[in-house]
Length: 162
Image 1 (cartoon, rainbow, N blue to C red):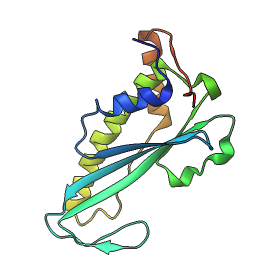
Image 2 (cartoon, rainbow, N blue to C red; image 1 turned 60 degrees about the vertical axis):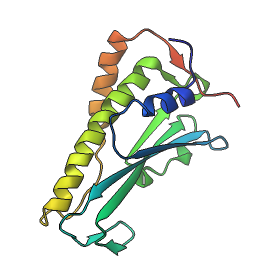
Image 3 (cartoon, rainbow, N blue to C red; image 1 turned 180 degrees about the vertical axis):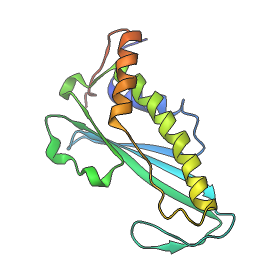
């Protein structure tokens, strides 16, 4: 594998995910952060009235749900508003991430997306379910990172130069 930076690794691997929604990646050079916005689309077959986090109600036939992951420099934790994201993941300054951590991220993200889509459909089809949200477990993620570390060549995905 040719040496890649963290940004190009994230961009290239987004396309490899099995996901029918939309994933956008934004790089804030000034704050040294990346934001990955995940948008799900689902059919609201029963025309259920759904209220979003801002209190806006809708019974549209196709609904969308968006949430984000923040990647930030561990040297600048003040840039993190953990309540604005379903996951906040640090990287190590110019060193970025290890390749193992990057691979583990996409392995776990696929699980989160699969579970999220299933949970969204359950939410739309079961009027007893009052809340839908994506769930990220740092503990589960770190288990996958540990496994990937044992099975991946040592390589860094450095913070991109600009």
